[in-house]
Amino acid sequence: MPWLAALPRNQVNWGPTINPDTCVSCGMCMNCGKKVFEWIDNRPVVARYDDCVVGCTTCGNLCLSHAISFPNIEELRCLYRDHKVWSAVKKALIAEGKIPRGRTPQEAAAPDEEAC
Ligand code: SF4
Ligand code: SF4
Image 1 (cartoon, rainbow, N blue to C red):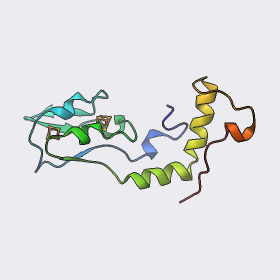
Image 2 (image 1 turned 45 degrees about the vertical axis):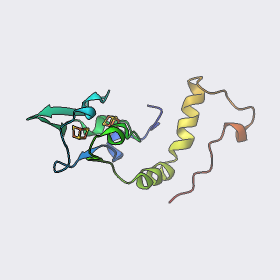
Image 3 (image 1 turned 120 degrees about the vertical axis):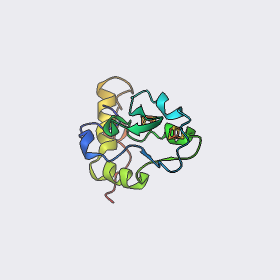
């Protein structure tokens, strides 16, 4: 889980909320590759909130009527800073060979993660 490193998904509040008053049942959100939505009674419902990819907002960006919202992104970034997720993710990516191992600790380090 490189987006989160070791942070459990259930500690991360991230997922879509549909405003039923503005949804026009265009169906676009049903393209979500993680199958977060189910189509019930001619409209989508959020069926698997925690399956949403942390940080993703694609369905909201493409929703015809701007009916999908997400938690505050700055709260998510604070959680990442407080749990040093950037450092952990970089270590995991180096271990997986997705980015090269730095020659020095400084090169291998993640950017500063000051607590919120
Ligand atoms: S934000 Fe992305 S992963 Fe989450 S429900 Fe929308 S399309 Fe799916
Ligand atoms: S993309 Fe927006 S308007 Fe279309 S079905 Fe989903 S929530 Fe409703």
